[in-house]
Length: 113
Length: 111
Image 1 (cartoon, rainbow over the protein chains, first blue to last red):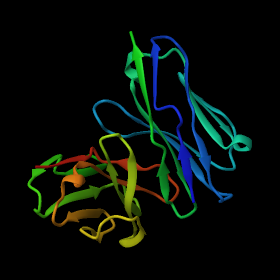
Image 2 (cartoon, rainbow over the protein chains, first blue to last red; image 1 turned 60 degrees about the vertical axis):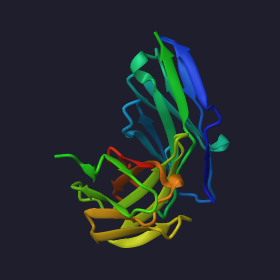
Image 3 (cartoon, one colour; image 1 turned 30 degrees about the vertical axis):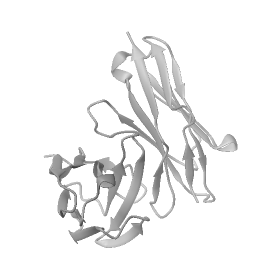
Image 4 (cartoon, rainbow over the protein chains, first blue to last red; image 1 turned 90 degrees about the horizontal axis):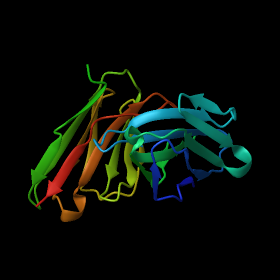
């Protein structure tokens, strides 16, 4: 069975600090897909990134970067120079070959001015 | 031109009532989903439909019944509502293995 663990329930940082959100997953599939979503206080779920299991290349998008390591079954998310608008709940998710998506419990990030 | 729209946005009703939440997507996706998000923000998949066919049916009470009249619509009907059904329900759609696009959620409150 698939499982996604986000061990950090809540993180609080001061603006301009860098912060890393951890995600560890479990699956028996060789083909799978990893995602990060953001849920701001307004409540909508916003897609951030998708990675397939064959692409371990790290990705950077502006202040956001993702580190995918199959050896440790981790897909961590780093925000550089955090801003107040980054305050949200962030979800890591794993989808198997049957498109069955499982979400982690989420990490609530608070960025203080 | 909202991609995934669900109605109503808020639903306040009494215990024991029956209610429906509608969902429509105009993205041309083959797969649609229903999720329940509880007060602790935990997001749990309930159902998944691919081209109107039920693919995933998690352990939810059979008071919850999804209905997909066509691949652009996936409605959720709930019978005999209970206090524990209070939550935010999200509809989503995707192409196979693609990112899921979510509706804005329906906040269901049971009095």
